[in-house]
Length: 236
Picture (cartoon, rainbow, N blue to C red):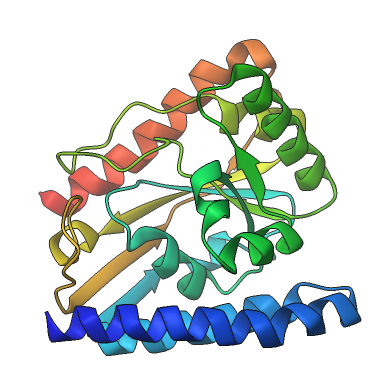
């Protein structure tokens, strides 16, 4: 529990200080790059404090990340910070509106080009998909959890189609990803972080060329199958 308190205390203080320093610099430079650098440094320190080690495999599958959507499974609050630090790319994300209400963090995310979504509003959700597709066409990389929320039992859940619609509309490349070991360190419903090793496997890219809006379910099933196969292979 001491590790968890140390991590949370550090992050609360660091978020405030880094935002107060980073946001003026980002506005001055007209670029969010300094925010990403500060963010990765803070998360790297937090992971070290928590005793978390991350092993990344298949990094070459990500290439330069342009017009790419990284799609991992989602089991823990640790997933996003682990991916942010491990991928090493200034990616964007579609995040639920509640995240943007966190002091300091909301302003940072908006400046960095993250997209707010209200899951209960279909019209707003569709606008979020359109904005994501536009950002992808501009060459940005996105991290999207296709399950939409953390799984309750550790099993891979059903995939929502919005991320696949955005990828199809932008002719993006999808990089499926398998996160393993995260649930054991911080399962859903628990705040305490256990020290240990997380394995992140970036799988072979999937091109969306040739897919149409009507193919979104077929594409989602294909990507889900790739992630499920990777997770099952590790379990066996």
